[in-house]
Image (cartoon, rainbow, N blue to C red):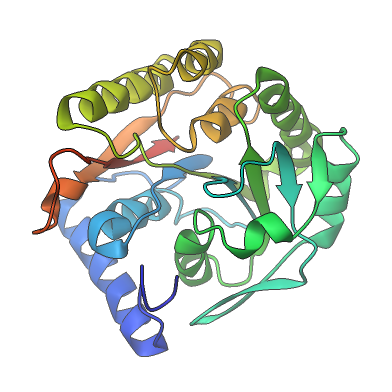
Length: 268
């Protein structure tokens, strides 16, 4: 998606990232920068870049050596939890090393975990956020995770694996879930879905989120990843704080029949 959803030229990319940071700082929306986990959107940076930057700023004060990024599958309808077999992921401003040892530990946590790069090849939900990782935590390694399907058993499997593998290194780990708040829907339906999604997140009830997702009253593409995070001990009893929001109506060619909403949230 480089050159389409975000700049593919290093200088232009750095300029965009710096502009997002400056705007976020000027608004003083984040008084804290020690978030243990963040939720960030994935879309063209003209729509979601500021919200994504605000999410990363919420964790900017931590000494992070491992960044776990959980994204949804969009085109591929396979079910499971897909880990990467690559040595690194590339961005226009440098490579991010994949922690193969931690990926291997996750794979051993259950049959839902599958090491397979094919689902990663055309999926943008993780890619969109990688330049923010590289700028904010340049020496950190990454653990890219794609979750396919919304089955409760898959969500619980990921929650358990995250606790087992990252519980012992939680102090130096940042968990990121990549999600938009709703699908391309009519304005009224999109807003209802997005509001319900945020309400579930703020409630801290991952079972309610799973039930709403199954009932079709939530359409956020990364809701399963959010439910997985909420089901872990990594965030304890913390509740997320909404940092910033935007939506696709900001585009001049916006179709009111197809609204998508984006928000950044952080667990402090």
